[in-house]
Length: 304
Image 1 (cartoon, helix red, strand yellow):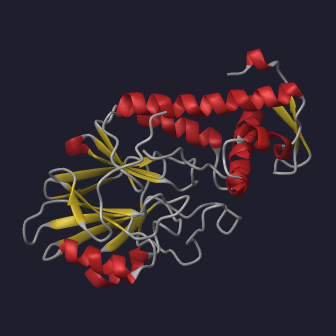
Image 2 (spheres, one colour):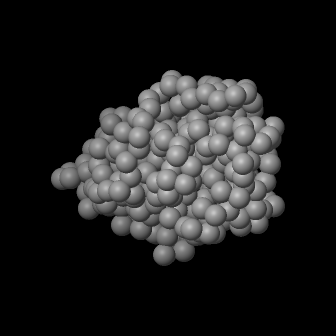
């Protein structure tokens, strides 16, 4: 895959990406956030315009100040959150208090506090308005449709900007990397179904919360899906070769990756194995977790 690793930005700077879309990036870079959380402002640029803010980001007063400067004299009508991880949702409450806007999000995950790899904000996050697939949120000159995309998190949602046929994809799709799908809250079967759902929409542009916009959407998403299916094929090959545990597979599958990232890789392999169990291709002895013992039910050439 051709990931987008380089783009022009400065922390705290407000960049206009389209007629209705601006972005301010928080200074929270890391192995799972890339250059940091990109918070989007959707709406008109004129004084007094009502705008929506998507994924306010981490609890960072410097980022809050940058957002308020970018918003300026405009009113914030909605604060939208794609999911409740600590790099997306915590600042929403502070932004709500500063602007008076209500917070919109999907219901909290079923596995709140369940050991998700990404730090969560579930214990503190409390949206004012719960939304679901197909709901529409509107302002003057813009319409956002909620697109439910469970997989990375069970309560993950995206927002489609209908006037520009674009998608704010949160962590569901990122231009710089594949997305982590980490059980118990992450679910690979749901993730692949959500990916197909987005592919079917034929968006012109995708704005991830981390990294640069994706403008060559169709081939990028085809590559995104192919990468997942290739990883699935590799796991089936490891099982065919005699591996039975995730601890045996990861050093081979991720030989080119720093061992410091193997814990995350182990959870990704687990999510694939759980999907393969659901597909009837693999069976597991004991609990379906990191210590599980996995066995092929069908020959490798019967899998994907």
